[in-house]
Length: 153
Image (cartoon, rainbow, N blue to C red):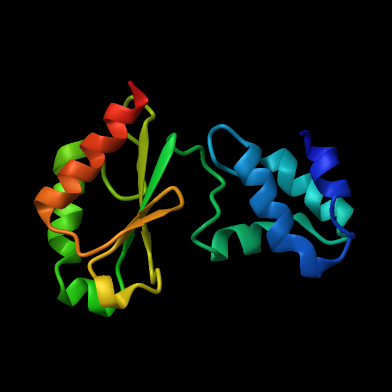
């Protein structure tokens, strides 16, 4: 489905901007919103590109840069931090050889932070694509990454 088809699915009202942006990002194989998307959304909603860039920049679920095939979002809420999110971050960095905000050399994974995944009872927590993984330990984190990699082969 192309950009124009995505836009036409929604009434041209600002209240639909988040849904439109999600749909555009989800159809992109690199999981990001391109400059051309921002321009098209601004025109469709009769607003400025700056307004759309502001929305894309504000919400952590959006990106204006290409991302990996799988997006890892590590929760950095106070509860997750108290329960070991820093250890999970170090495990992810070591296992994947990637820094937060970056993408692995092979383009398979991106590592990002998120403020809260609403799973405090299972902290520390990360989300890979749309799947949530909780009660993480360094070993469970490595196993999760291995399982995802094995599914790809």
